[in-house]
Image 1 (cartoon, chains in turn yellow, blue):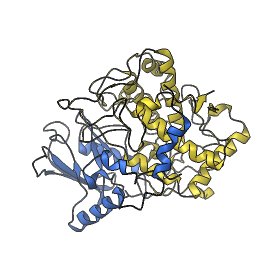
Image 2 (cartoon, rainbow over the protein chains, first blue to last red):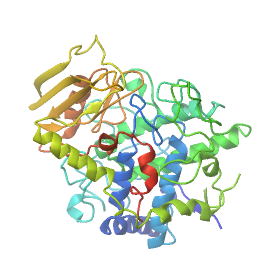
Image 3 (cartoon, one colour):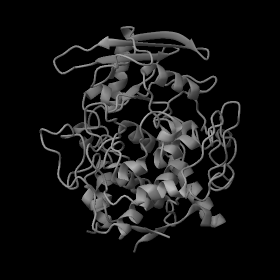
Image 4 (tube, one colour):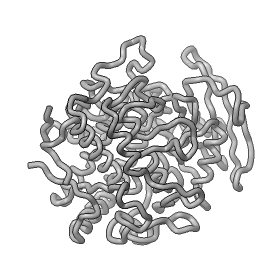
Length: 288
Length: 164
């Protein structure tokens, strides 16, 4: 029986509490930090040699789908009623709307050092000490909307621009490709100006603080953000039923991307599943 | 196609308990960091492409104070038959900052992972912008520094499994 992932804005007070408590329990047991570390270890960029799985690659979506399933499975062992909610940043767009409330993820970081001081993940609450951070700071940080040079969350039309592309991904299968659903959603653009961050990348930038760096998993909004992206993959599949994950076959030996990306039927490290196996998870969960 | 719950559950379960089989890449990376520190070197960034010859900083090193922090970087010519570029060694107040290269030649740092910059100096300054007052970089060099197989086969051994 498939379970349901809900929009975080629709969770009841009890559902919010149970989701938060399961996260805090995972953290207390030391298991949460393993998720932070795994994400750091798998951040390989396309300007370096080697296999890319999590970012700047076609498997950006199945990699994070599988990563969320691991987290969700861990949470459900603690409390079987819990599922990972999603944050629809095209609707809940302010620094005070969900999920930035005291009964969920807490609010923005304070001005002086960007430390999150409200909600269950505030350092002073005693349950959320960062151990796998990019800096030696022990507290969670956020800079919602980027105070120094404000920017907006991605709009519905920007998301639609990605969803409307019928091709899943295209050569050269990296951060420089300008067409294809995957990179339009992942959000690597040309240059380094504000306009170059789309969808996924732009949200990391908008939240700021821990979410901006390699240890972005330290902010639990990571999961709500990626659940929403995972929902977009499902929506894209429904809109373009004749299209699938690409590439279907591994790039050949003469191809610059040979052994650097994961094709449809290749295993996706560190797991044993393939993108093909992760395309349809309707037996496991569905979105409300 | 449809994947069952059981199939998806396999990976995490299999990885549980295998962590002690051999040193994790992270441990190896830390040892490497310790050894490079002993030599007075910052950890290395292995770039697969030549450094940009023009634009931005242009040169092969920088050493300046930016927003109260000492930032230093040097491009060390690569050695070995497979190296075709160089290695940027970057520090912020003496602490190593790991940079990564994008295919378009721009640079990302561990601190600012979702924006890329034209030069190592710009990426380093952007990292300083985000580090925050009173905080210092922590050694978080990804394991790729140790085993030379970035994101590759080393992972399939399961030592990076999420035990949850």
